[in-house]
Length: 311
Image (tube, rainbow, N blue to C red):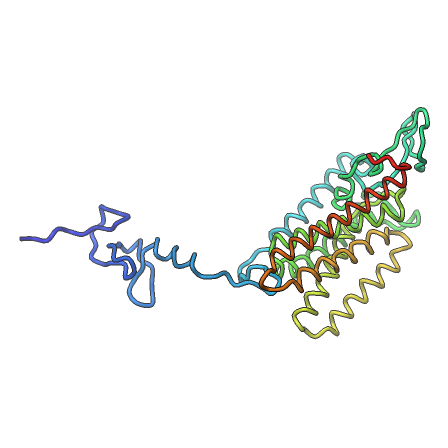
């Protein structure tokens, strides 16, 4: 009596006599996966991969040799798209740039902010409830025609410098932190820069990703310190950043730079030195605390500017 033909469990029309050494099901060549002994089927390979613990960095980021800096690419793309939008509609800068407090007159002119009721004038900025400016300003840059000291062109260079810094620092930091932690660090650094602008120079209209990038620079320093690497080159790199912050204070928002630097350093320290057993929970809590503190500072400053009324 002839034995019944055996077929692949996934492809019944394919006759085969090879079995998965793990589940003992018949498999065809298309379903075979090399194993230490014999072959495994597709499902057994997937199940085995799920049981393997994902390797992670000391900061919690997933280790991958083929990881693509997706978040860095997206952030750069958002900045570039926003800049193209400025070329089409220059008014985007005034509408979404970081402005703490200002007054708009009856004919559309902008004036220094003063609390009180002035007929024909209305407040604009964070003080008037436009909280989105705290983040949207970090994705805008000086228009192409902007100049330093009335002569030196700086508009295009502004975004070029920032995107160069984001590309070089962002890839390294994202690789160590992973996408979620990296995005939280970036956004909190941008927010921290805007908050310090609001506290110190609420009447100044500021734009640029510099605050977030200074936060990445601080994170880069903490990462290398935490990993025990040779700090000589890293310290020289940070010294250059600090010197640039001092020099650029003449024509850029030093408040945004310093706020981003301090916020990024604080957040990164929490991410880097969280205890391994409760790492994720501590990191989330630390980021939450930083966010709450920044929001509280905005509320207090708004209350002070408006005489107690918070928009």
